[in-house]
Length: 388
Image 1 (cartoon, one colour):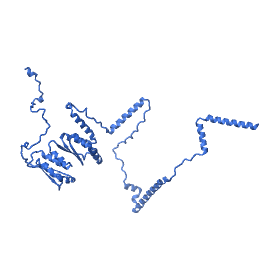
Image 2 (spheres, rainbow, N blue to C red; image 1 turned 90 degrees about the vertical axis):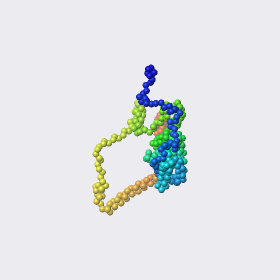
Image 3 (spheres, one colour; image 1 turned 180 degrees about the vertical axis):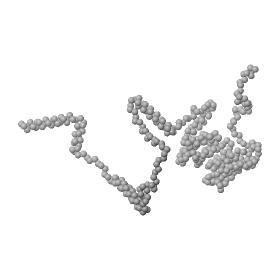
Image 4 (spheres, one colour; image 1 turned 90 degrees about the horizontal axis):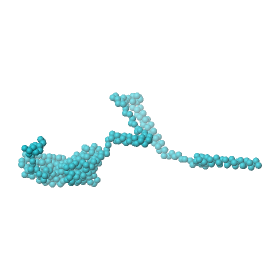
């Protein structure tokens, strides 16, 4: 009785769970076993499945050269393929030798990759069970053609360095071709590459995602961090592009802080910023209708003129405009021949007056007075001598 009381009570949502002795920790749950002919218990397929895709004209020559290799790669899996040069299409279909029901979808992906510019030996790797592909369409993500070309080039990087870094970190094959990006690799890595490509076309540089992937790869090597959150180790990039309203609010905050600092220091406040002109009052009534060209001709009387009179009037107006333009052009050309105004050199008298004026302004008034007194004394002495 006591033993039954000591047993812990099972939760209601786990009461139907049973132990699985065959499920041990040494089993790799994510391992994909190859599909062998012995795994197909149903035998030959009842219906034939087929897929077709178009290819551009410039790929025709290459496909004709490598089509024998493509046929050999697909025949080993029991898939038949056809190259139609008249309609510019490739097709794959199942045969009586096909044993894997999913291999026809792999063959469809292979001809899609061949049409998008992937080499034949690289495209044949898609037939492996652990490799998938993703064709990312980037043509309609950016409207401006120049901006689209710049952002697409940003994926490749200088001398292909950015693309090489993405391939090394994600273990994927990436090919940028026209308006699409072809990716081959594991399923988990395909998701990362798609995120990098789409973010790059949204004006987020791939280097940010590359840094994050590098940090994640280093953190995955540490078994202690397997059950912990990695958010504290990942780089947090601040968004620098602000909206207009955010810029205005920050500008107003800075201006208010400066005003408070000037007020505390006892300085005069800065002049207020120019206010925007007040918006016009909204009225539901439309503006008055503007007169037509015929109405203006009726008002001026031009409407009632005869054809030869109208031609003479137009010719006169044209000649007047030509005369105005000619006179204006002559005036502009004549400006180059107008002599500039030159300052004449001052005469001796002007220099003497200027020197005297400078002495008076410089504080030599007393000296000038003394000189005048001495001159008066000399005059008096000369007068006394004359009287004697």
